[in-house]
Amino acid sequence: MKKTSDFEFNDLQGLLRFGYGGLTDTCFMLLDVVNVDMAREWLSTAPISSGIKASSLPDTAMQIAFSKEGLSALEISKTIIDGFSDEFIYGMVRSDNCSRRLGDVGHNAPKSWKWGNNAVPHVLLLLYAKQGGIDAWRKTVEDELFKKAFRLIRLLPTTDTGGNRMEPFGFEDGISQPTIDWALRQGTDPHERDRYSNLLAAGEMVLGYKNEYGQYTERPLIDPAKDPLAEHLPNAEDDPTLKDFARNGTYLILRELGQDVPGFWQFLDKVSDSEPNKREKLAAFMVGRERDGTPLIAEHIPGVSRKDHGNNFTYDLDANGVHCPISAHVRRANPRTGDLPSGVTGFISQLIRILGFGQKNHDADLVASSRFHRILRRGRSYGPTLSPEEAIQPDAPIAERGLQFICLAANISRQFEFVQNSWIINSKFGGLQQESDPLLGDREPLLSGENTDQFNHLDSLGAKQKVCHLPNFVTVHGGGYFFMPGLRALKYISSLTTKGSHNES
Ligand code: HEM
Image 1: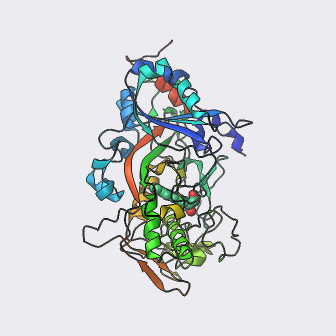
Image 2: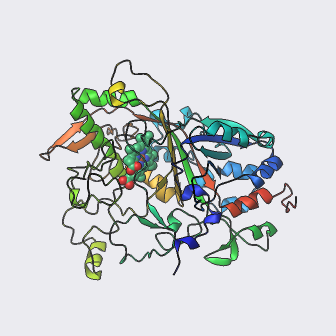
């Protein structure tokens, strides 16, 4: 039987396994390749951190990912690039329709982005260091060769967290994450998966492994007879005659999201008649957790304690959103309902539900199963902290604050784009209308003219409470799709020469 330790962690970039929370300081750089040979030379010795667990926290870590433009700049063949998904190839800003679906309209429209709207920078380099160590780490990395190989396109703002996990609005972040089945034991048989589970097939996050459908996500596979460099790569699990360029790699989705912290708290203060408890409650309703991370259903669902900041709950016993509003950010981002509504066991009852009969109420099947739409969040926030009490003051200091939203997933469209479009931005969600995610909604009216700027929740008696005219709290400043390769694929990339032959040096 396979064990977690059997997984090829030595070929995996560490970010797939760790959030590097102990490395509190970060420097995220968007780079363009200016000298291909020098870029390859630098890549061939770059100390990219693997997924192997060290006995103690390292002082620093480095991770790297490439946009499609970056792979082209490094002269990766068109055949390989064409093996990636269309979303990666054509990008986040691939059409007006795509931008509308992602909520990138109005104030979020790509035309006003700071980066990523025309071409996505070639390389995303993520540097992490222990408190106080990032400047020295960055200096070490930016040696002469690095400077000749790359041009800095944008230094993404980040703030050294000091171990604080609060995002700029003041809520604890990074709590709910899927657990990857590194031991590759997870069955995909629906009979074994009739409950919401946090454990996910490795192929949902890592390319080259079976996903939750029991299939392998499309990715570039190379015929070794046609490419001698492919010897560096692992065999494809689903076709061992081919080499797998993407095995142990993943897609990295980056969005620079500005947060209007004074605007958020001042709006809540206004609609709460400046009553601090009311304001705090409404903010928690919008997020779906209290500021310290306590799930809103904690006191109401048996088995979920106030201290349970984890993931061990569903909303099945709060179907109408009395405790946690249906539109709350965390409930939209992960409705948590399993493949089949809870309590369904046995072949006959499952068949009845699959065929759409026997539902106790219409809410049960309004949200699609969530195990196909999970993401691994690895973002970091930026900007000076501002407490709600400071933020409600009319002279609250204005500053750039926000989140470098980073998530990892093996399928950009089924995971990130689905969550962003169908759950977060969609104004028709869970029986609701005229509203979208209370934090992230773009507030733009639909083409039909219908508004999307409401937030509805229920009071303790179950009566509907409507908050109207929500302003924008979050603005997209840039974004792009990247491929974070496994370390053997990185070796392949750095071994190419301009003529496409093996670089023996
Ligand atoms: C500025 C923007 C954002 C803010 C302030 C924000 C804030 C939060 C907070 C406070 C939580 C609860 C704590 C936790 O479980 O980690 C959370 C959870 C989550 N967020 Fe966001 N978020 C933002 C953007 C996004 C985006 C763009 C996505 C996806 C497209 C997303 C997806 C999620 C998911 C999947 C969860 C976990 C839900 C669960 O499993 O319960 N968030 N977010």
